[in-house]
Length: 622
Ligand SMILES: [Zn+2]
Image (cartoon, rainbow, N blue to C red; front, side, top):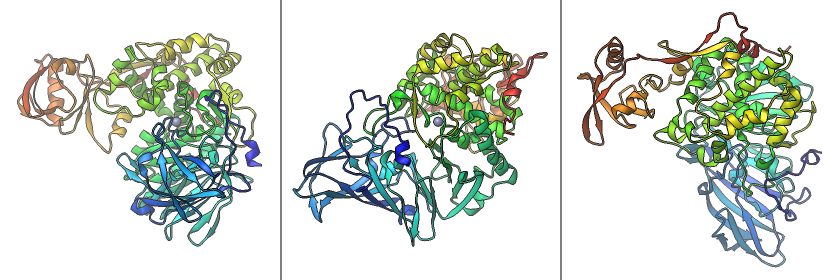
């Protein structure tokens, strides 16, 4: 029944012809994931893979949905042993495709056994702690090369540490002691169904209608991190109804928002069709600043069940995990979703609807001060997403990164929303488009692909407009400024004032710094280390550079207060600020010629105009 719902993927892989899958519903591959030492950062896989005699190739998943790149962590697969009927077989890695392993299977053999270790914790990629772990099945399996992932079947099992619980969207769980067996599952569904496990667990119903439900399953490093305030829980319980009102449809049977609360595991959000893999700091549910700065984590990933999983770019939809995904349309998939995930967080009340303008000001200001936008259009960021997701280091505003097509996507799609609202005199909005985009109202987790032309045609049916020219301007060509008309159209103007911005303050709650990005053009740590410098700014002209340490300000030892005093004094007609800096063992005296005072971004109401931002953020659910 479920398998019948899974239409074959329409891939970017023109000409791809799937080989017959040897792992069928009747004779599936079997996979036992022994996670009993997950807290120690290691799991063991025992897999039986149906095979044919002679040369046979198995592959490790490379292109991971939701990660939008060739991110399968090949280095975390270790101690690979392949055998047949108990006899070890030599394996050889393919020299051209490092994710492929060749074996010679003896005559008369129906299956090979692959045993290996999954190492869970690498720098910037921590998947387990003392109290919890995240299982992404793509990290824990090999499969027959060249098959279609919806035609390849696996019966998965997991062995849990003593006294740990689990949660997942996988079907048919039966537990016996510490071992849990699941129903036979197509490979694409298995990879789409992560599993969280841990010692300290709370499961909250967010919504229920008959057998359909949405659940928030939280796993914490410490039991006290699960003490969610009642008001915040009620806000999360409004999210499903707000999403149903936004989209007018549902494309899952049930849905698990899987949430880890761990500083060790860190921050991440990966969307799936009937679940999400959400990873947040340990105080995510208990510190109000976390809801302000990261309050769209759950709503963003939930929204992807419609936008990204049900509706998906055709060229991002591939027949298996080895075929490259083309990521150009992430400006729809992620860009629109950034707007919708934020919108849901405000409509549900995780963040106060009246705070949206303050938030939006930070998004606009960040995008408007990126000098890289003069050379690098949004379409390059999405097309090059697998590399832009890895972009780290100094001069982030020159190099740009994948975060930009999320942030600027929010501005682009807010612009779309306000254009529809203005031209239709309030009769229609982006919500109208989303209802059409996700028809029919109820299906299981199937995929309907789209192209840019189809998005523009559907928008045109909702509101006649030259959408092609609009996206050409803001997505397909460089634009010196991000879309700005939506602000005035919504009754607001962008300004800088000396009042701190609440969202910038909240985002720095755990790591306070000095935000001079929008003033003299540099961000500093509280101790005076330069974090980054904006090209062309007074700080840039003074010669400040990332990594430099400011030791003294106007000959006084550096402190945040001393620096703030100097900026204020210079504003009142004082001389340039003198800075003594050190850089890789050398001292310099630099002159910061800046006199406009400290500035933070805000939106201000334009008197006498309707407040469209307020109208957009009003809760919709009955
Ligand atoms: Zn996303």
